[in-house]
Length: 293
Image (cartoon, rainbow, N blue to C red; front, side, top):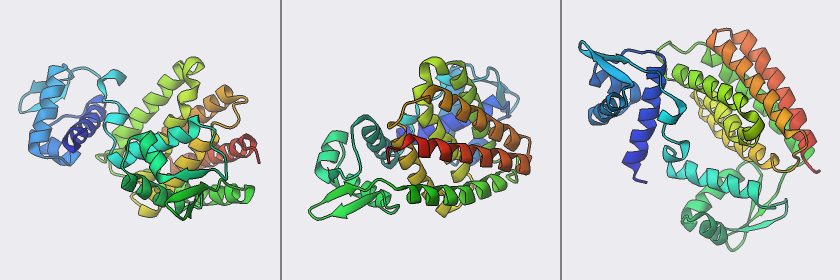
């Protein structure tokens, strides 16, 4: 997919978040500034919104005519960058295949499996090796190191420090920050998940990753954002190992997410912090119980 298409679809999804909040679009220039896109892209977005009867012209601006549905959004895979798409594909491969610690991984074989270039795969593996999960070997091969209980304890400790700080910063964001429509949409996605979790509970890892990445990335701290790569990889990876009580476990985690989201939306930092601590403690117990040490 061309970069311009990804940019448009990503910006369109952001515009839908704002439409869902009944925000008035004063002008094409105002929309372009909010979405950080060109006027031409903003104009295309407005035309698309009008064609779908989601907004209507009112005076010099546009107002919400119909609340967007989940089906109005472009799929995440169509809005991701090449790097994000490759990372997601690699994690899916780890989750589906019987890949255990000590497994040797070839850059060339991964590139063929994922339909990517050797250089892009190498960059991905180098990025993920920073967290000690992979070890570089000669002749462009890698070894999956896995993790120990000590590794898990260290991960949990750092995760608490980073995510608690991220949540504390979020409640101070101004009302017009793009985080707010995104967290509202995240709440809707969790509610939809719970409505159909009996049949779709296995989809929770993706929702979990999206939720925590939204919190961490919105803190605008490069170190916190970088750490999310390790969290996503390891927590995606462990979900495949022990499926005991997976349905109930995922339901509890989703409910804990909602508790955090509602506290953030109410601008109650201490309540959000305590809800997050409870959730991370639950996640640690789940993690330790899910690994075959």
